[in-house]
Amino acid sequence: MLGSVLLVAFLSYASSCGVPTYPPSLSTRVVGGEDATPHSWPWQISLQYLYDGTYRHTCGGTLISRQHVLTAAHCISKNRTYRVLLGKHNLVEGEDGSVAVAVDTIFVHERWFSLLVRNDIALIKLAEPVELSDTIKVACLPPKGSLLPQGYPCYVTGWGLLRTDGPISDILQQGLLPIVDHKTCIRPSWWGILVSNNMVCAGGDGVISACNGDSGGPLNCKAEDGTWQVRGIVSFGSNEGCNVEKKPTVFTRVSAYIDWINKKLLL
Image (cartoon, rainbow, N blue to C red; front, side, top):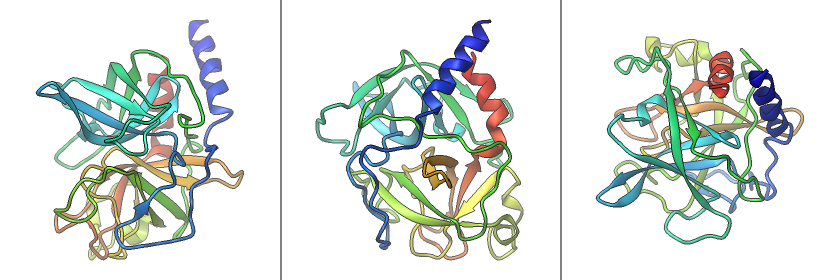
């Protein structure tokens, strides 16, 4: 009975998911991405860890219910204290409506295997539910098992490095990353066998990609009904740099983990 109540509650959040109050500007494409329209990706969070009495940004993540955030397993260390910052555009300035929330529990996938970067997914349960607002909303989850076609336009967002070996961005960035289908991404001259069926690739033109600090953040893709779905979780990229041709950003494919996510939402 309790599980049913929780599921109904989650579905009520999801019914209004993926619709930002301030729509993102999607008209331009520039090297290294661009500043996002403030609060146009209101499910984007900053995962921060405590160091010498100060919280520092380490990864991105996606709010998928009032009390749950999706991120990457490789972002999580057992020895760190974390908090989640929501409703932010500029990480170094005070902003009305932003909140910092402590973490209750972190569920790292039981089959997370760092050597081959398999099952790179974690679900964070916040210490308390957050109040949804114009600047804090939830993203939609995609249909179980679903795939997007080659070239489908999606957007990566985050506060990661602005370029290879460059500075971390204070302002939330966005970048257009078209989907690369699986048969292309596993070509030997692309990622080959490093990419599994539970991953999705996007980008790879050498112009734009995710970068260090974007890990755990969402691949945002607009569905036919106009809502935004989190289709991927930033997992890994090329060791050669952030914008390397034929080395698209590799994401954990969220649609492959819907059953796992739903199970953890009830805990």
